[in-house]
Length: 194
Picture 1 (cartoon, rainbow, N blue to C red):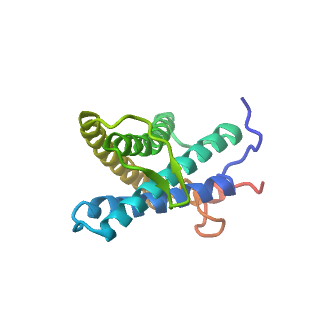
Picture 2: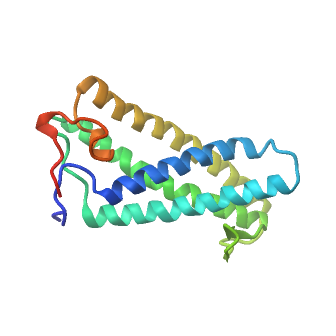
């Protein structure tokens, strides 16, 4: 299916969603890795509530980004990119979308199986997606943690590949995901004006 917006760079919406999700993932990583060590009390409860709300936000933004990508398509590969690199990039993007959707869902599941209410920034409650179940909760916690580490590894590899393309190959892979003018793209890969 041809994309409605053929181009060589990512759209402004794709860029905004990419960097917003990236920032939220960094915040979630820090919160998730530190909240378990907090002393019991109101601050810990508030931190867990924030973690859940940000996770739900990532889920919604990732779904929006995936929907937009399915509608608008992705830009053509950078000129000269070997086919094997295109395949790895495509597989990485699929894996990132799967993890960005699966991680919040496992968080929602573990929250439901623990019997806790789930709110989005205190504005509204979300329904439970499972009955209270200690064994399911334990499995969901383990799955949630494993998916987090898988996402962390994939994000580092994704960022390293973009930096490799920019610093060593000198192509526009990184430049076309940044606001125009932040990085200079090579002359043969200058993004088109939409």
